[in-house]
Length: 512
Image 1: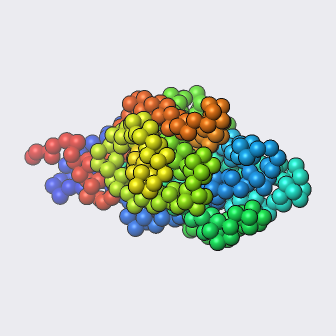
Image 2 (image 1 turned 135 degrees about the vertical axis):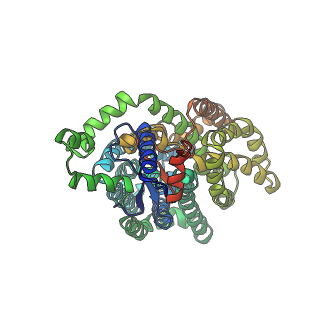
Image 3 (image 1 turned 90 degrees about the vertical axis):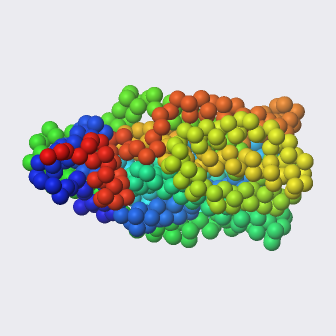
């Protein structure tokens, strides 16, 4: 029996015939959910186990995104250290181009880690991505400057950024799949929101550390050696994240697959091969072919949703500190403090957004976020440009509250787009393609557009509006999945009573 779940079939106190009728109805309902399911069960989750798994996954995610976020908050300094030639704009563009390089290899990481996670388990892959991210980040902090080794400095920077990007390719798909497969159907939005809370915590920790160092050391010392400290912190934090991830249990779904592979009983060879083809040696190639040949409509929808969401996300949380400092000439500490405050507010409300999308649906919350960016981006940027805190705070909150509607919902909505058999791989590929093409390039594209249009400082608002319009169309095309089982999986409930209620509610009680 998998950790954290039990199997439940309906019971009755009346007579054996009543039990059989309920049981047969139960099995019919489950087979409609998953036609290949031969042994009908409902996963009854243990809330303590679910909470422990969600906390560990979210904390590990926070460590990973702390490592990844450091670069964006040190983009200006890194540009001067590794790309000193030319104008400040050229150095910044070079720094953001290196930032984007990590995103270009993310789809490769997703295509590698996604099928691997279906083959060897979510836990092992999530541990591996943590090791790679921590190693890549630590090595960036050890690279000599351009002044010391010349062209080798930016080359090594690009290599280690690619290692970061490759490892990140397996992060979101694995972590969101892990939580989605653990959570009961009616609380998937709530538990999924903690994954994005971990992302915000990682970014907040990175921004906070950079702010403290800038204030304490000053810009000259930061340029000389202080910028290395946040990257070097990745080593011990990576060990903490690795410990947390190794303490995780596999999801009940994956444990059942492993147990059934070992004890398949009287199942025929054909049935066994069909059930466990995802564990075969040539599974990655088969899964990739299945994803692109059978799941392409959902893959396109995933790319549209994630692309729009990530443009808004990276514009606000990654690019905004540079925009405030480099374009609007705010003090660097001032700009970071504003973004940190925004992220802290989002962390306070994101779990409430998770509860709301469980209750009212994923689509209403996602549409609210997309329309928020489309309608409020121009007013928000006009307020931010005023320069006073009385104007900046409401401007950032307008964008932040629009973003949190997306943050608190995507981690539950995206895994539900794909069936269980290809969920990790499909989500990893679709998510990382979108992030690579749109999210990771956001700072670079905005900086280039502003330079091309004579320094027009409203370009970020227009860019976010275009992304939000595409996102709103994608939301309108998706199906509602709140409070429903994941496709290809049996229902997951919080109690045995809920399992019985789910079955008996499909039909009136038999009369005798």
